Image (cartoon, rainbow, N blue to C red; front, side):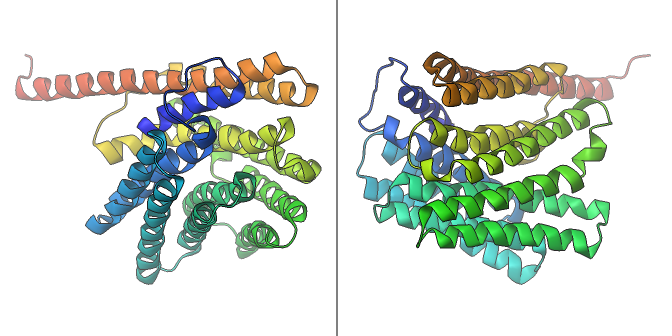
Length: 356
């Protein structure tokens, strides 16, 4: 959570908001804090809890400590080194999982973990962030895609449908490798992979059916479907603006269409399911969850409009409202947990002291 909050603050600094910079190079570490210190640690924690391997908790611990080093302004080699070490542990955990059960979903998630490791090693070696970003994004996209593929077993798709998914992942993976030769071509090939994955998820994911349900099930599906659309948009942007994947407004749009439009939308959708299992708490669903979801996507649209219309204020406020949406979702989740715990305690009291 410290990685999340400092990463959000660093994001406002990078956007140009006149805020104080409490630590040196905090703004420069916005991406690494959000992707590794927050999301990398969170994904590693989830995997460790799922496998119940004590040594696996070293992965989120190292990612968090590496993020803490970056926050206080420690040497980049130390922070990046600890995060890279954490990603090695995550890869090792997936090796154990694959030896236990070799399945396409686990293989996709393992490849994603390998992308995180590769990106972290390149970062530790001093590569520029725009060259590392596709590896980090591949980690997040493949993690989500692998989880969705695993749930897709309920749909009992034909083998050809699984083959299309596999082809999309091969395209993206090939694009990353092309990056060692030609960075612009790499972004275009990766964009084609994102486009194919987005189209596959939008067409074959179970969310197409659960969106017709009610309550929490429908909210989760809405988050997923919105995220899949943004993955499609990201693919189109990567194909169209590949030479500008270095810095500037188009670069901002290409990154955050994935990171906010897809990844954060996935977090909104999965949090009410994962957090109860991970933290042993109960979340009381409320329709107020739709408010931060709508704000997140509306603000992202404003941000991208500002990127491509040279409207600095739209970009500035779009970025700010993106972060407000994240904090608002967190606040509503805390309230939902409080209500869930109150309902659980009331239920226990009613069982112990039944009325007549």
